Amino acid sequence: MAVPGARVPVAGVTWVAVAPTARRQGVLRSFMTRQLTDLHERGTAVAALWASEGAIYQRFGYGPAAWHLS
Image 1: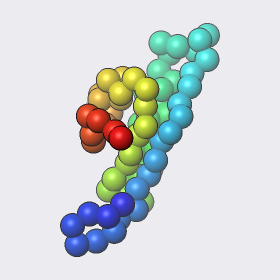
Image 2: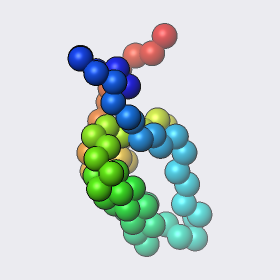
Image 3: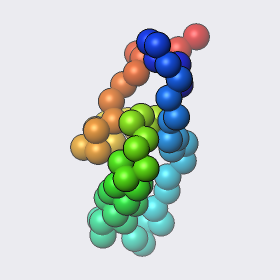
């Protein structure tokens, strides 16, 4: 990703799913915590997420980058 003065590596998540029988058991939280911990240990400062329901991921630190896309 280009940022002012540099290019930085970006981790990306484009698709996450949990089987209906495994919901409300901490699977997503475990996955996201592991991913973000690994990224931190590697020194990756930016993680991007493409989600249909972005509000779910705000608790992990993700937020809107843009309100409109064209």
